[in-house]
Image (tube, rainbow, N blue to C red):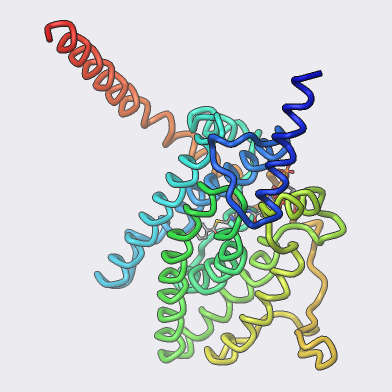
Length: 321
Ligand code: BYC
């Protein structure tokens, strides 16, 4: 009985902290569902950053100039860093990254649908920066106010870097659009291929999103999937006009009454297929990640052996002292 009362008091303290826009920290009591939801979302986010290195990594050796190569290298390295901050955030919730990586490579945890599409030309690098990082910013800026402290703090730094990523993409596209007809066609083709998948990044429509309601109540998520998708469309339309590209949606138009853009129906069958593993690059992305993990075993072994040796030395030092 006493235990139940204690638990109730802890739950009330948790609810009060969340309601007052306070932060839940790793040492605080939290409902088991809150912990599980955070692990699910942050792990999926971390996996997305790590798998997201592949489509762009594909172009590092073929970047058209030293400047473009240096920028792309920096961006892909940032993504590795984002994955590491996010795995660290999950570790504050009582899991470890080895377990999460195993779940990713066994397809027991998801990563973002967007990274299952191929990067066919260098214009895709610009379009990923503009559209994919643009969607990431739209989705992730509100997560800087997420109720879980380590996640919210990781997002602050990640969002600053995403902002640089988006600008480099836009600048690359501006350069291509000021080039030849063939370069402009290359940009338009990339926009045509990435527009709809970038809208899918925000997740299923609100009516089909099983997690949104509870995640909003816990203030893990601060907006619904559809709210953020709408914000993204409204933000992107003027940018497309500035670039001189067409977004591939004949139903896209300003709705004066709603003070927002209407847009066409998303192909949710495609989204479901890609999330379930049947996208154009799912098998390749996971095979590559699995090979990198296996190839890195010797590094993990060496790091563990070094840590064990350091600990033995420390203990010997303590005994001698
Ligand atoms: N792809 O109830 P819902 C980046 C899953 S990194 C795959 O709405 P939730 C970048 C969802 O997990 C981009 N799966 O879920 C990196 C759930 O499945 P489970 C990653 C998706 O969590 C490198 C089910 O569908 N960003 O931008 O409330 C280079 C039902 O969905 C997707 C993040 O991870 C999807 N698109 O909302 C460049 C941000 N959408 O787990 C760029 C953090 C949904 O129940 N995450 N699912 O089996 C979030 O904000 C939320 O988790 C989501 C989904 C909005 C994505």
